Length: 148
Image (cartoon, rainbow, N blue to C red; front, side, top):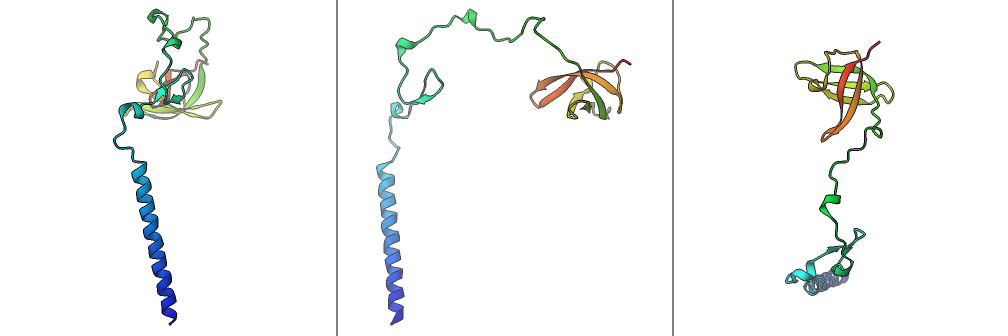
């Protein structure tokens, strides 16, 4: 007779699971996003860069002259301070045309390409170089041997 208690518990759990499943199905049906109009799905960006569901107020619109927009960020020559960095060539593969410089101050490795060499170099040479950000990271440019 002990089996009937277990059987009732199993049936009760099955019934509860079935009810939960029906409840979740009803919730999904009620919150169905299909059939929303384009306006309901639109999101706008306000003047502070926050997303909003209300369109911007056309009275607050600012006009900008195209001539006032500068795409280059060149600064006057007196503001530019180019600092030459010093390092040691720790790896250089002449056949593949690239190598690495270890910076003497930061001990960071910087990639260089043979096209950026101002004069022929080899491993363990002390060089002076500048850095430039490339799509693949920081690279050394205008690499030349240090004058003693």
